[in-house]
Length: 306
Image (cartoon, rainbow, N blue to C red; front, side):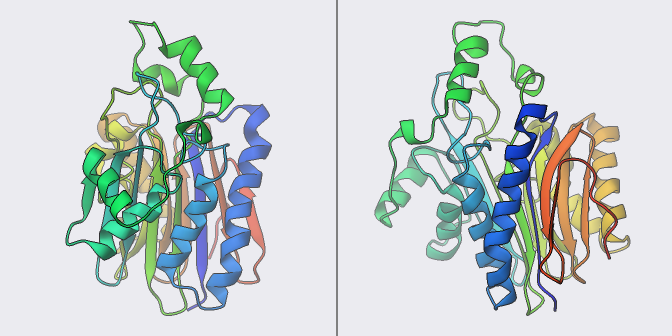
């Protein structure tokens, strides 16, 4: 198989002044990882590595750059899945971890479980020697300012407000390797001003991501409470069994919009290596690699591919 890699950097009304940072960030993730994928890197390694790049970028709501909850803390969620054996790992509400997707993979590979949350996930991270960072290393001036202006001491604040003046920059990656295996990963800081302990779609199987060699793999982004209700990523993968990749992505987002009035987007790769992307938000950041290693990055619509 010809390797494939596509990433997203969130679906919302990305402000004009942040467009270049988003384009640069998603392009960097693909450019750093795709050559390794061509050299034989597995799809699972590729999605972890690509998401790691995005988690380190303060542009996005994941790792460094994550939003603050209602108490002014950062709580991170992530998941990773591979399509050969349907193995899956996830963590939620973890703190002081730069790469929650790597912790999610450790849950998948080093425990008998699929999902660890909060204090238990934190203890597991320490047990395996994963480095913790000072919370200030994850905090950006952008998110601190938003917290002070919109969340702190505001009894009328609702999570909906986080979708009005600011982008939602959950990150994700989907890959196909030379052996025909697919994988997907998603990582997020969640919704600004969320209640402590809130878990969105990103770490939930079939919602934030899904991967199955018999169909393809997908990663979602957007308003988590609604993405969960339609299992957006699993819905998209199921549609790949009967529809081309682009149409499957569009149809999945149509389900999100018409069934629950949700907002968001999805990226995917079918088992044949065709890309798909769709969103019903004003903008969505993405980048993908062509067979000649040319990288396309954009903010709005994904051109027809394959």
